[in-house]
Image (cartoon, rainbow, N blue to C red; front, top):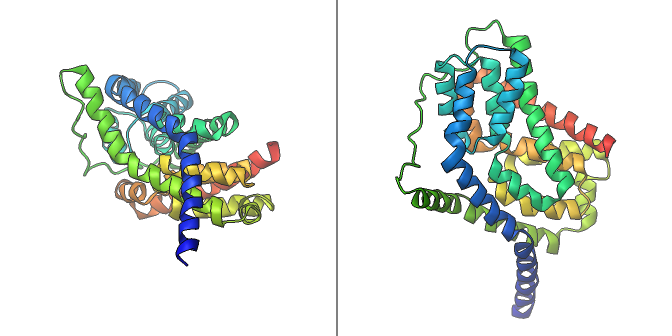
Length: 301
């Protein structure tokens, strides 16, 4: 029995180290770039959003807001207070929806992490997340434009800026350390889970769940993304292994949308600003968009 356990530890350890070597550089690079954006460009990105206010073409504003949301380095609990300050400045609800939706799904750090999945998957992630933000803004404009306020930001104040050290290098290193603490454990857990999948889950099972029947695979990925997604960096090793084992690109896209959009911490923050009716509509929108997107990607690729 001891020999069997030792053998399995050896196998899992080997897969763990192989996966770690493949993805470690992307993780480090992602943290570095994320900290650079947060320390040196965050205020400029958010300043552009504030300056939009209520003027200009609504659709152009939706597209611009979704683009700025992708560039924003904040997590959801940081994004909502910032969005509340945008609202006070007169930014339209459809622009806020577009910014918040794309910000939930993607940020510069996660873009770098996703490079480990290959260029095609990276481009699919960027484009679909951006379009998800645009579609959210268009829906708010068309169907909820007559409502006085779609969001309720009363309980949110603008977050305290922690990047205030007068020494730029120390400010950057402090931000990088916070990034390391926030993502390190989940990154290692993701690699461990990937190693376990590689050792004990047959490729045929992954193909059956996420690949063979493509519509079924997309639906499964949309559903699995809800409970499994905890940290963006932690899911990259798992996705890498699933894709290698037969997961379709559409299923991967669906997982990359529903995962961050329905992460428990994100849902908790969104429930406060949406209310129960709009919150349920948000959930339905995410699932529907991810399924349609996954099916279309499978048809194209």
